[in-house]
Amino acid sequence: MPTPVLPRPDGLGRVAKKRHMLLGALPGQTELALLHGLLVSHLRKHTYPDHAPALFRGLWAEQKHWLLEHLPTRWLISAVTTFADHGETGADRKLAKSINILFSLIKYTN
Image (cartoon, rainbow, N blue to C red; front, side):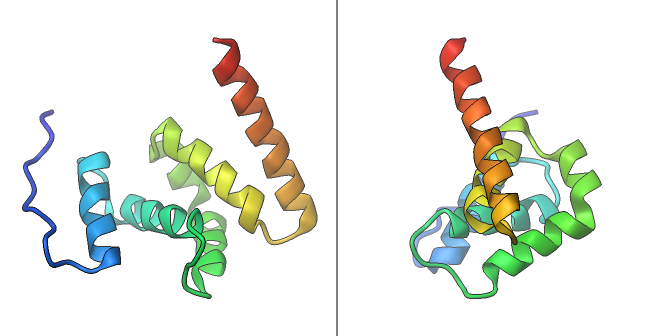
């Protein structure tokens, strides 16, 4: 399926520009996948809205089955990396960091 041609994001705000970029990176995906992409993108930056970590965790708590089944692998890995920084408990963050190290080892040994 060819990637759709999207209008240029000139004059758009930060969130609208990121959404525009994600529309190209996640062609044919749902708004749920786009929301996940926006949350990961914001949480990987130095500044983000105060409610973003709770929204990210809530999205995974409520939609984990759908996300695991439909998100591309690179976005699942990005989710683990995001949990390493924004997991609810120290144990959650530690587990996500350990999984992230495993992913890195796999990436560099291939």
